[in-house]
Image (tube, rainbow, N blue to C red; front, side, top):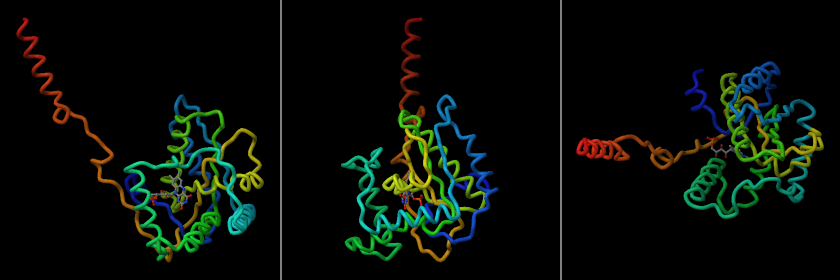
Length: 241
Ligand SMILES: Cc1cc2nc3c(=O)[nH]c(=O)nc-3n(C[C@H](O)[C@H](O)[C@H](O)COP(=O)(O)O)c2cc1C
């Protein structure tokens, strides 16, 4: 699988078969992903991979807790700003529409949306998951490093025939995760990631993307008028020769 194929076929999969994920595949992926870049090569990721009975235990505890309506754990970081401005707010709404229409859930059907959300803590049926922590003392640049690392993992999983879903939802029950994983003090749970083989029977709508010219600006001689400036500067300097 080439890189373009890996990027194009990666998506947040929310339906996995129970087929176990070979430990060797996870080791290959995580060893290769360790080559991800990070500022000054500080490698600010702390990853826990969980499978088997321990993952079952974690899923059960988390799902029970959420189904019971327990409050979320106190936030350690802000998932989104309280008022998401344009164009991000519109993009988030579009995503919500896509997601719930794929599930056949009406926008106002709050209960059905809650039921769908609970699947997060069952890892959408996946038999493997990772939990990625970052040191409390690190800053935004290191969080960006962690993002690159996680994307590298997700692309490498594609090369192994595996799929994934990154999940900030796990940060909302971080204390339950900590009960099972016992991470050292001072680490913040950024997200979990469900990992496994896709269940082709689960319907989904492929998410869209903003047109390229909304998010990318090519700055070249033509667009910046630089050529014109250079020409006139040369003409100017010619005058004084
Ligand atoms: C950091 C991060 C956290 C996410 N958290 C969740 C989550 O908790 N639950 C979920 O179902 N999807 C989650 N997603 C998946 C996004 O909704 C998804 O990546 C986005 O809608 C784009 O769709 P695609 O990944 O299928 O292309 C998360 C993605 C990222 C990058």
